[in-house]
Image (cartoon, rainbow, N blue to C red):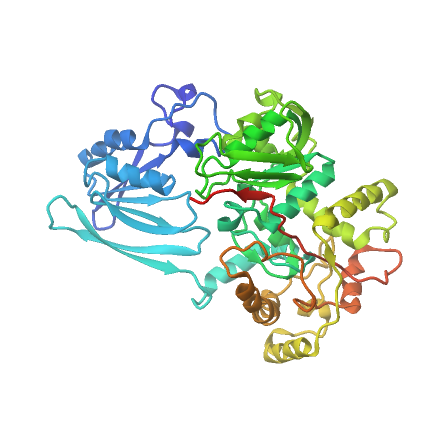
Length: 533
């Protein structure tokens, strides 16, 4: 990628086109960085008028220069989807590049194409690759490689000096991130293989919350917004869960646009299906069907907004991300006038709220609505309206006393873990951590020991919920996996006693008789595939 503002044939950011590294034994390793054109549309901010050069053409031009400079081994570091990395290996002369280390995709894959190894080592430090290389005596091959996949699992011992360093650097931040903000009574499916291919309950919940918060007609959110790539099991939701799942800092915006523009946005959202693309949608108050066998641009077959057929000429209000309102990920039909498009903004990025903030405010409203005098009448009416609408689709579950066998399981776990509990204070033990949304906390914050969370999830969730859930749902993927819970399906184990502890930091005038509630987001068949690939 060349930036003409920086000069002729000058890469973006004045970066180097290639780089040579000399090892301790004198071996010269040449590096070249390459990216695909498709990735550019997903980047939040880029200089204007960039000139893109194809990866294979760039490699054919620059790698010979590395060889002439004495490179014994050439490594291409790429940000491309797997098909484009494979195309790169196939389109350059055999052996020109020794190994391609690819990114962008969130899975592990290794292939050998045209005497070039193509390797992508997963994401989020869930996997890594151990690589050994030695010179080859075979004709047309420079190097032989031994590539070993290493999965990062809990049985691998932690490096204690690194643990101590991380504890020192993140102690204060961890105390904040470990704060519980609420409960879920249903597993929240945020896996990429779910949210980027089909409707998900966490996507439904967040899109509905966005729509009701701003009173929009409908909402569309690119699935790439959801970054958790895991199933959040029933139980406590902590601030770190919300921040990890929704880390982006572009706010929710509200647009005024035509039904035709909404249709074009939906067409774009499924244009690359079944690739695991971040542009795939999660929606609210929209029901649509699409045929992946049809050509991109004509895949959407039916669309309803508020259960009525989409009117192409009608003007709707749409809640979405600022990222999409800038036309990113192919959402050109949502491009606002301020960004050079045609769409009017009702609420701009300057005045919008982050998704993570809206979620936190929702959980706070569950705790304090009609119970806290500082939650004023206007704010109270606003959140009452959101609750009335949101809970029709995503009911909240009342807590129930824990069953005897669960209490006994926790008692045994506590006895085994006595070495961790050095104080009789419930705050020190991490067993009754306050749910506190105040932002002025300082010295009194106590970090929640992660072993308590692990034990809770291991005993209560993994044994009681997951086994039955997987059997009934028939994973991977099932529309009933997050339906409303039936009688006896799952008992949320918290009581009025713990509820009072959870309320303690909110400075509520009088303690409520009711206990905290848990969300139970559902699947509603909003997105439907009408044929199979």
